[in-house]
Image (cartoon, rainbow, N blue to C red; front, side, top):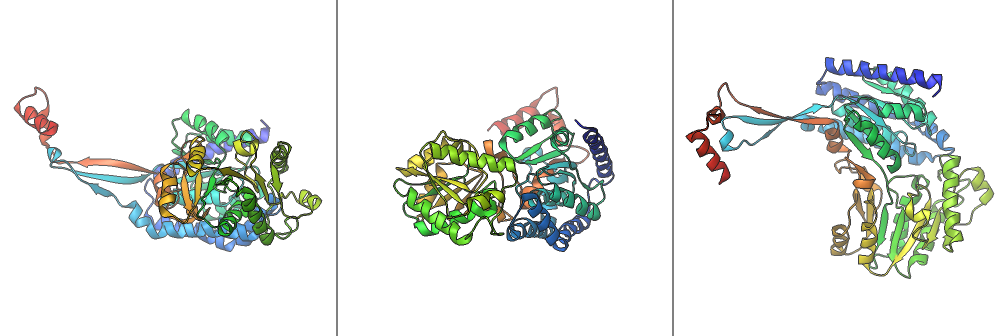
Length: 473
């Protein structure tokens, strides 16, 4: 660990202490202040949209501005507006019923902020995946520390600057630094830790948080399948899957990771997907609308996956492109791989790039069995014109979220909880689910100075027998 990292870690601990002290001073931030906080987040997005998009593009080498606007900046603005609109309803104390045997009394559930929360965000959507959890934490009345990915330093530095202008350090702050700082961050005694990233690192984060019994939300990934049924027309399937897969050059946690298609249709579907990509990105290497791979390491990893499949005899489909120019721009052209070996890296690791395996299945049950034999994916996409058939697939699989005849967009519905299950994560957020993630639902039972339950205390007599008999009936 360098001296600079050691100093950053000590500073981080001091900031946590300052936020904890500030939270104790204001445990229940009033709704008008929370709404003003949400407005500040939306305003900094609007006023700095160009700078945010430019920082993200700098980190990637090239990120399509249109993708940054719609998937990062506008997403956060809409998220903050939705939270502000529904905040009074979410914050309300709820009454619940009391059994006759416990009367007289009243029972309520308070929604109290957890306190100081830590947010660890990834590189693939470096602004949205830091700010959307922050929106939820702010709505819940919490204070927050954010640790962005070291792979996107320009975005991290800009967020740090913008949030420092909008909030005091004891309310919201950004901690930048490398792996040593990130590891120390996950070991802090937060009141909640929110992590978005790989399953492998997620396990380490969960272990680190467990040392202090810090509750965690893990937004992970996994291999999200798209199942195309015989009833669904090939053209629309290709257009939808191609758009979702090649958005952000496949560097999306809920991008289709592989396709299961009826046996014999694999190549035709793959060619249709490539035709869609060729139309959307006529020349991937020079097209600013087509995003680069974030780093040399990830670029080399993806190329190695493709070459492994090629060496094993799988057919590789790509649109016409200038290979040298693509390499210089760190771009991998849209790629479809037909029936790669099941033990290949393409089929055993999350791809996280513009490479799409298309596998054939003989019967629909075989497709759902294949999904069920692997870790639960973060998303599942079903393409079927038959509602009964689509429901049959849902009944026989498990995933974080589902898109039927569409992909990606389920995460844009504010009132749908977004999150994984098992290997793809635990916990959820967006909308009220996000508010509840950073909220403690606190049970309260009230009664007067005297309550009949005192008649049930030892020595046990007739009153105890009467009450016990009624409760056992």
